Length: 75
Image (tube, rainbow, N blue to C red; front, side, top):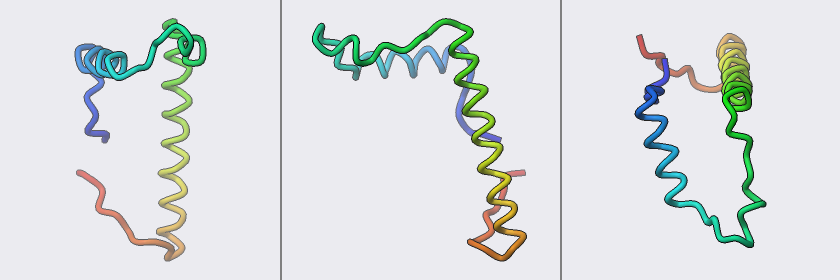
């Protein structure tokens, strides 16, 4: 299980921090446009989740074939 806090408050704080660190000068603003609609965010989260699942499957396949070091999985 991920140790990242996905509570609404934690996500809001991370977004505020990213905004604080962003370079949103007028000449750069359009370069960083990201669709922040609920549907677009949900799409991106689903994509990342699927990629994570695929990565974990590859790790298991590698471990089963003696590749790499086996990691301890949290209980």
